[in-house]
Image (cartoon, rainbow, N blue to C red):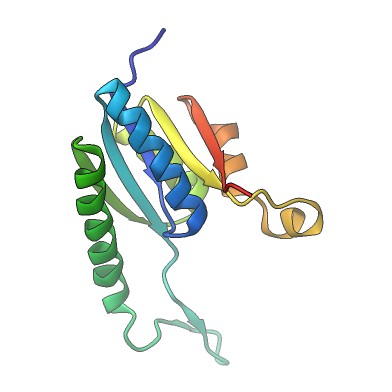
Length: 147
């Protein structure tokens, strides 16, 4: 069996992501693994009538606020897990960037939350977790929110 020493935990700061992080903390503690928290965001862009894309007012602060939130979550995770915690903040398509982050961060496992959507909402919104499972080169553990 492969040794799991680095666990990537993508977060969008939702309840689903929190549940996945709780699970990852348990695993990391048992396996003496490092937790890598990742957040992927799309830049806030507004389409103007003349066809030009523009950043809304205050957009440059978005990166700083997300980094602050990620750092706060990392500090809480260090306390809860007593394990090393690293962070990565990336701009782009969530599924693609999560898969890339797992490779670049040399992670052995991805623990990702899933909303468990089905039917039309799944068709329209898709599933980041499903796309990650399809394209990741390491094992992916999908954690559903408790009902």
